Image (cartoon, rainbow, N blue to C red; front, side, top):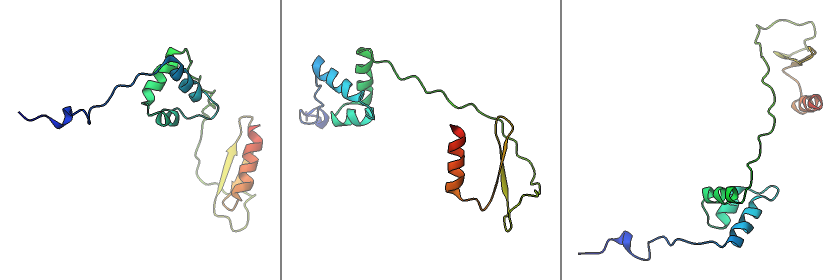
Length: 123
């Protein structure tokens, strides 16, 4: 009988064992600010799920999801002419804030300027 190639010692995956200190060091590395769990696992030739298991074993709590912004109602209405339309504009967008204030933006608005306004309103 011939030997199956998958059973050859060169192709068999060797099971590694990690000391408690090595596991703790890798888990600590995954907890650093800006660390990607996938990158840490890859760097140490680990499966990402194995790293998550170690984190649970060391009592690392999963981060609670940040508070999500509320979903606001949106109404799309037919195009209405406005006395405020800029010359040469072909369309407009009206942004109604929670307190009822309105921002009207025409098609020719500068994107950077609109971004600054929206960021200022989020504060």
